[in-house]
Amino acid sequence: MFLILLGLAGSAWVTFRFEVPYPKPPGPQFDAKVKLTYQRAIEEKRPQLVLLGDSTLELGVDVPNLAETLNRNVYRIGIPGSASAVWYLALENNIASASYKPPYLVLFFRDTLLTRPDDRVTGRYFALVDELADRYEPLVTQLSYVQQMNPAERFLDQYLPLYGNKAQVKDDLEWQARYRPASLLLDCNQGCADIAFSAVFATENLLPEVARQSLIDVELGLYGPASEDFAYQVERSYLPEIIRLCRENGIQLILVRTRTLVYPTGQSEPAYLQKYIQDLSAYLASQGVTFLDFAHDPRLRPELFFDAVHMNDEGRVVFTQLLGEALQPILK
Image 1 (tube, rainbow, N blue to C red):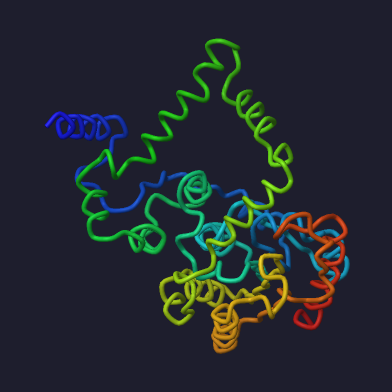
Image 2: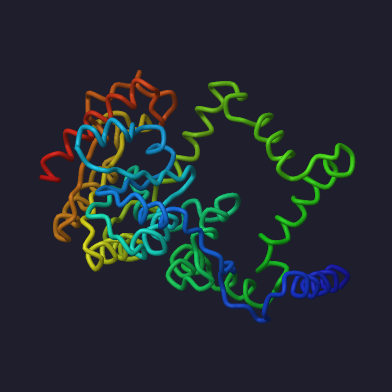
């Protein structure tokens, strides 16, 4: 009885504290402010190619050299930690909504990431989604959140505010723990504390084998039963909508599968992943989308990587050259 009363009291406090409706619609609440940095840059620079992806793009492509090779104006949107939900929102609310439409969009992905709308949308990744989302994003809410809930979770999300708004509660408590002591005891504001936390807990401070295994563990989430059936996954993903937005805005979509060391050779890949890529390739061909696959390119040797997915400086030079050579005939 005590726990029930405590849960009801906590839910009432959450409702008033975060000003959420009751019952609330299932899924997270996005704020109304959309980050338009990329849209403004596209309208100002008027690039002929826009590159979109995560940290593998940020670290793996030398944009000035690529632009020189292609003799084209190139703009990069590399968002570390991003996945398909963020890429869809960047396209919808920044690239496709710009007054200038770039002729080409080159989207970089790894293996099954394109059809995993649930990947990197919660926890610390939610901020990436929220900053590019408008107040109402029904497709994102459905594919990345509601679609992943079972009936019990949907009921609790709507009718038990302490459960439905657990992310806001966690963030609020974490903010108090992270920043309040620094402010009171060290006269260190939020920006100052963030710099300190980043310096102490930076990846380079981890033991190399720990950092490598941690990254592989995250990557392994892209594989397994939830990702095996492309035909089932594609209709539950952002890929059809990404293709539609590009087509309607006169943007030619080019998809680039990047290399990783999780399954470094074709022989090491599970059979279902090979079948998945075959089905993906056939689907993209039927949609008129260009597909470039570097996953097992022998010229991208393991020594060109500093971890399982990111290239080192030498790898960036090699991959940029290979990418430019592959793009040249497409642009012509």
